[in-house]
Length: 111
Length: 113
Image (cartoon, rainbow over all chains, first blue to last red; front, side, top):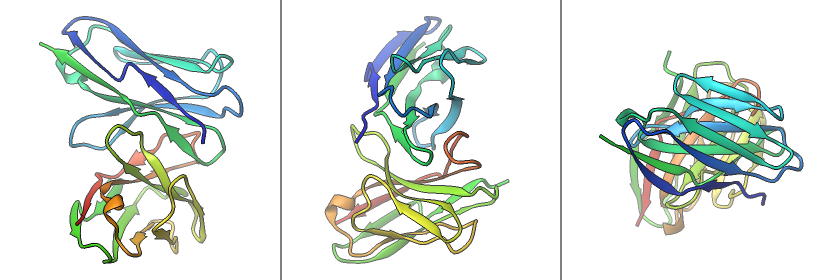
């Protein structure tokens, strides 16, 4: 079983702070990297799907980068807001058909 | 557009009972999958399907069966429920395998007593 690791497990930031977290994955047999946002009592929603080394994606104040050679992706949130509080999941695709998820980073933004 | 619909949202079963978790999507997606979510762990793949009539096992398939008779529906069957199957179950679909984003249902919280 190939492991996808996310760090930190949880963090608290103040409103207005910028933050980032990491997703690490085995670099061999890499196909794609997904990021999802998962709010309490809801279902995960996709943020980004990235496939190429050096990919950078942005959606509003959230952005992500991908390094497939060293096996990591960063998710950045600029100027965190309380509504950004959620668990952020990454998932790597090692074969053409299966997502392998990390355990998530739980973000709490304090007003 | 309903997306991915799961039923029921909550279920309590006694050990040894069987049941079916329903999943339907209206986006004409070929790829569908079932995951379970346990505390401290990531979503783990139970079974998946790449199209009608085609299913395969994921990471944790034991105790579960699936079938895919139509593009829209992908039910998950618990054959003989065990307390270890207490979990939150999510169904997901995607348009073109996992190069495209997955859409998730609302989840089913299952308790086996």
